[in-house]
Image (cartoon, rainbow, N blue to C red; front, side):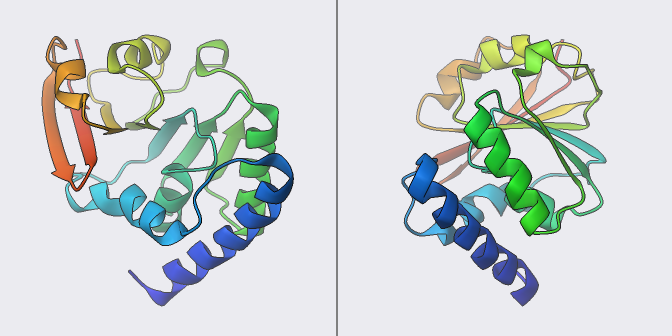
Length: 179
């Protein structure tokens, strides 16, 4: 990764620590492994998305770090908890990430847009996530899900192309051509 990326990560870390003192968004002390975990899937994504939807964005993982690299992609971050969506807006502004739009609300209650890529990190069961994303995807959308040890069991019943990339404790689940 470029020096510019790591400078942005350091700036994000400053903003996060400042916010975290008041709002307790996350327990991470070292943001570098989180950034690396967030961007790892870029190595095996076989396309450059134009529109990405991140569901349950929380403290911005993976979307903020992906948006730093995929700067040609329009990112839509959906976060229903006000303190978290406020943080996301503040972080995007502080980092001058003009490719990020924060939606303060549950994705299932928001206006629908078609995404090329839908991401989510350890939010909920995969089948439930797909259900709440109705209207945001079609047969050309790729889901990129950051999962733990139950990933294989969560996707075995799904009717789609599926692949799991494993790195350390993380399972990156890629779903395509959902039916």
